[in-house]
Length: 143
Image (cartoon, rainbow, N blue to C red; front, side):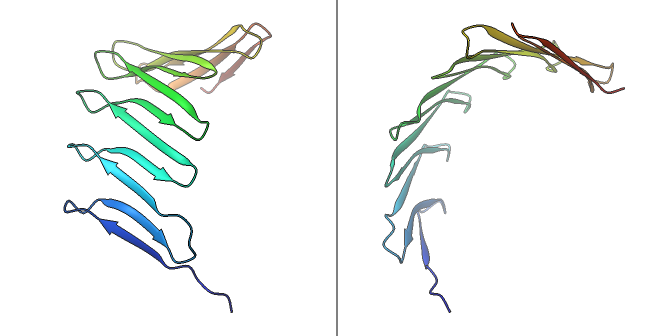
């Protein structure tokens, strides 16, 4: 039979996990939270991951000291995620007035931009997807 690892969780007064310890001497993982109860950091043996939020409580940044870089998130007035920026570039998301996704665009490896466009029926159900890049266009349809 093998030996199991005992995992012990530490909690704060709000019943949030603030530490995870292991009986096999794996380094302890620690967490911190903001006043809203959102995780703001996680520290483990590979480094620190930090999360930032705006006044509405939406995730606006994630940074990782272990080489993961920083990711930034942007939102429109309706609260839709409209951009995600990381080391590869920015992905942009577009929505119609009802909040239905209509397209996304992102940088390609060759320095160009690829755009995916979505079509929906009158109930907001996706019916077509067009993948367009500088290389080729591809269409998927479901009717």
